[in-house]
Image (cartoon, rainbow, N blue to C red; front, side):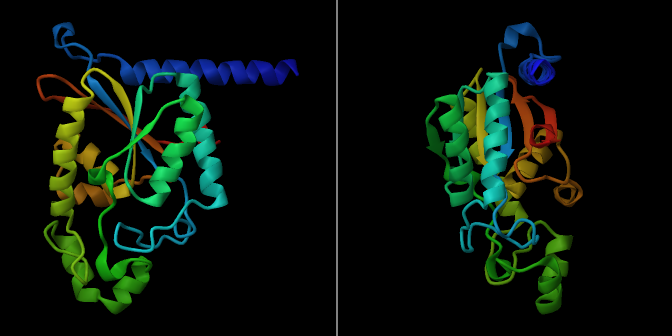
Length: 239
């Protein structure tokens, strides 16, 4: 119908405007050239997501649920309308590779896998809710909440270790994709860490960010080492 066509055209126009804003040079001087822009996509829901269970790189490696696949299709359609993504890089875990594959099929791109984008290993907490961890491992949880150097029970990965891994991955990807817009399909902790590092925020800021399934965030990186956060936790494409 005419009404539905008008609505679709308006949505497409809004997506294009949003993409241009994310990819624009911002306050950076023009002689620095186009930044490397990382569009950060959290994977779609898995069966563990709505239950709010720890799901890192050391657990069961769940695939997307039906809801997660639908979310991936919606974000793929939105990114296709925007038309700015030039490459896709994903974490090696099943849920991110599946999300990236759905988007890549829509955009006609290949998916490169980067191990540095994997989620934190939550050790013995994998598959548990926060309340269950609080009940079983109260001292370890309190230590983890108090220090980025504390590891989850059972030899998991500390936030400090995740931060170092993500920083090294960021540097490799910025060098590899200078001047391009790249979709990085990853997880809660790595995406929050990209944002935290770009803002120069302390490690405890990770606990103060909400990142929804299939959400989009974006950070631009300039030749002089500067970074600019352009977007955070956008879920408008899921409505």
